[in-house]
Each structure stands twice: as C-alpha cells, then as structure tokens.
Image (cartoon, rainbow, N blue to C red; front, top):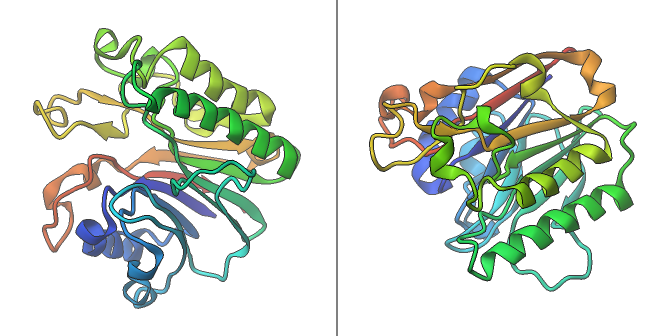
Length: 262
C-alpha cells in the first residue's frame, strides 16, 4: 500500500504535474495540501480521468487539503470538528484500505511576534486532542502532511538560519513531539538516520540547487504499522521544473512516499 503527502502550492498551477505523477506512481492515497481553491472549484473530473476520486476541504486563495484515492474513501471527516470557530481548511481524514489516513496542512506560524504563531501552537494542541478523542494508537493510522516543523538538526542544511524561528524551536518541536508521544512514529526517520534529505526548498536564493532545504513534510504512523513498513522516500525530481512532461512549474515541496507491506 502506498500513501503519499504532497504540498502542491496551488492545485490549479500543478494540475497536469499531479495527474502525470499519479499515473506513474499509482498511490493508494495521495494527501494534498495548499489546494488554494474552494471545494466547488476542485478539478474532480480531471483526476477521475486517471482513476482517482477526491474528497476535499477547500478554501479560496489559501490553505485547503484533499485525499485522492483509487477506491471510495470511507468515514470521511472534515476539519478538527472540536467546536472551535476556525475557518481555515487544514485537516481531512478518511479510511483507505483499512488504514485511517489523516492529512493536514499545519499552520506555518508567520513570525514569533505575530498572532499566527499562537494559532499554530493552539492548532497543534487541538490536533493532539483530536487524536486522543477520536482514535486509538493501536489502530492502523497514518498522520501526514506539511507539518511546517523540522524535528531536529538533521532536517535542515543551515541550522543557524532556522533555529529559534517558527519552523524550528523547542516549543513547536515539543508540540509535534506530543503527537508522537500519543503513539506515533516518524516513518522516514525509521529508515533514514542520516540528515541531508529534505522535502521543501525555498524558491529564493537558489535553495534547491544548493540543497538548502528542510524536511517538514512527514508521515507519522502508529506502531502496529511498523512491521509493515517497507520504504519511505522523497521524490526530489518533482521539485524540478522539467520533471513534468507538460513543463509546469514545480511546487516548492516534493512528494514524500510511504510504502507499506499490506
């Protein structure tokens, strides 16, 4: 079983690229972030052409998440649904082939002195509560997405550039560690102990050619899935402009691919 997370940074801009990638890689579930379209504008028919159906939680201009599957997803849940007044489209969940798949676009946090940073911290705490109240760490579950958090120094090339900022500081790492402590494991780190492998590179400053990136796109799995863990890889080629036959511009994120033996 193949489960993938990919921040596409606008599904309109990346449509042909994602379609071509789906046809080639054939994942069972593809979790997308930063759709930047409302639900009614999502290109369902285009994806059905290559054998995928989508459930979406969209928003105009910003945010937005989706899960694309070959088979009909089950028990779809939109948002954190915790009674908090929150208009940001950041979470979607569905059961795919017996695995609960939760896809999220985690808040960036802006700057430490902005109101976006407390929102980020609160959202992470709300997600921990979501797991506690809705799920059991003994079930087959994958929490994936653009976390907007690097977990340790191996997840960045230039540590001094990021240390203490909204993507890497003790507070945000601690909140994500709370998610792991609930009963999750970083699937990528199980198979790749070394650093230098990243999933996001800024468009500016020749960051991709210099490999000056961050690993902020994660696939966390519950411990029952550890015995089924086959491979986790980052498809760096999709960060290249020429990787798509149609030549569409790449997202600043690359897909991260989880393969399970099931």
